[in-house]
Image (cartoon, rainbow, N blue to C red; front, side, top):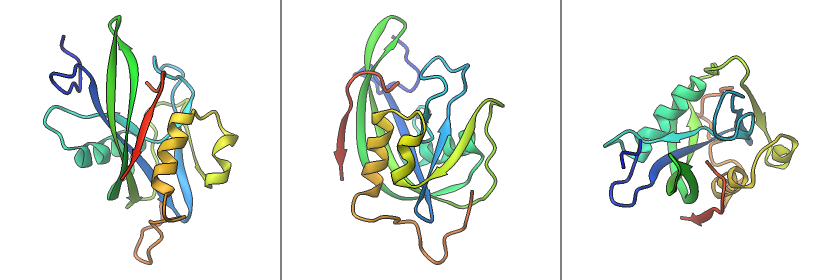
Length: 168
């Protein structure tokens, strides 16, 4: 079966997620209501890797596509996996999660009904966000309240099923 972003013999997809932080705040994006997967749900920027693309390159490409932001990978914070359905078949998805420092300011969302917010970790539950995305943010926060707050940082504005998270 030809699955976009597949990992070859596992039959799953490879994804990369960006936990973008600025001054102790986390960037969340609300998905468009036209999305087939989790419409209007809030989460971190994330998407499928292109064939041959490294997770580090993929997370920065997805960040640019989904928010217009340029970013710099600070570190890989963990991995996640989840089950989803593709063309009537259940597949396992593997995701690399990264802490990302924004290098640009202006956020441009691809769809007019999308929204974004910079929230403190304590405010994450004030939007319709799933536990899978909460856990990804927790991975990035482990060990430091804001690991991106260096003096030279530029100021800038199918998780159904069970998830298994591993911190590194």
